[in-house]
Length: 156
Image (cartoon, rainbow, N blue to C red; front, top):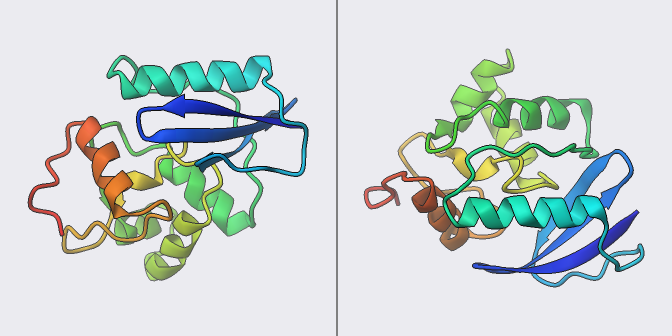
């Protein structure tokens, strides 16, 4: 396993990977308990994320290996089906995974997403168009949605 820090339009991102895929992305310069050195995979990930920020990429072609509970993994897989430039509510994600009453648990799984941007938890909003539940903060969530062309001016 390794990690490296890359400059991005929103500041630095710390990208961690091992031979199976990306394991985490952190906003900021984060020191992890693994060697701090770039790899082919962390470099490729940084390049694709930079292309995303430049408006040149809408989908990522990277191996992901998030660690979580079975429920979290199911939610994170469902998040990856939300198209670029669209949003879903927590209830819609709960419905999509066959657990229509688990919208609060979906919110908790979103909060624990170890690979933001690539697993687009920023595309999940509250039932009343509320920009809630983003671990990196509402300002970054609004920025990412705006980058994708979502009109956030009426979202609170």
